[in-house]
Image (cartoon, rainbow, N blue to C red; front, side, top):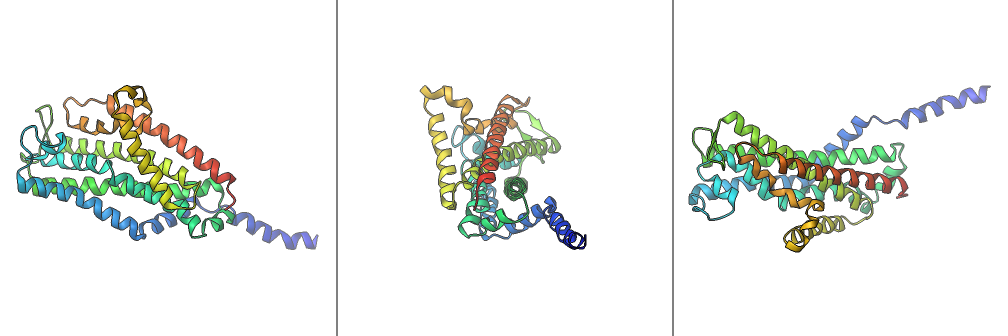
Length: 290
């Protein structure tokens, strides 16, 4: 009896240690992610996208009628279009690069530095470990979009200007400041969902390798391949399967009335990628031994 009683407290303490608070783990991971120089550099580059776009349009007066990309042409004298145009431009490369870098560091980077094995042996739980890492990547995705959107709104109002804080839509109607900011928020939320799909795929790839560059090459290369496939008319039947095929839907927020079909279909497609990527990541991490 004495022996059993003496051994009970350590067992109880071990049991208590095995249930680490998920919120505290996620908060620690988020703090660690936000201290990485790569994260800060990429967020800084993202802030420069709307600034460079706005200053360029303010200095040149914007492209003439029919010149330049559609959204960029609509920014001239219409400052609240700037954040939507900047999000569209950043979604083509810099936003995916930011999220893929965070996902590559989350698992493959930890494996490369030899710290992932310690995490796998710690009393955390494989699924909780994935959730913890996903929280860090999600934070980077949300911050990246917010940086572009907020800096875009400020730059649009201050540098580009417009008709007294209103937005002129592509349909020729005028939206008030509140409704215009609502459209920007809609595109920002939609962009975050698209980035979550990229993050889920990147985490899945990161779970299989110890080389972060492999994750970046796989994700960015895959997006390029998707873009090429989407441009081939004979492969139109592949469009519903390609994540990038709905990335032009953000421009729909500049139409009045607001069409939701493109935004809804691209969001649904992205959520499918999120589920598949998360499932593969959890499956691989549950069977990984270091």
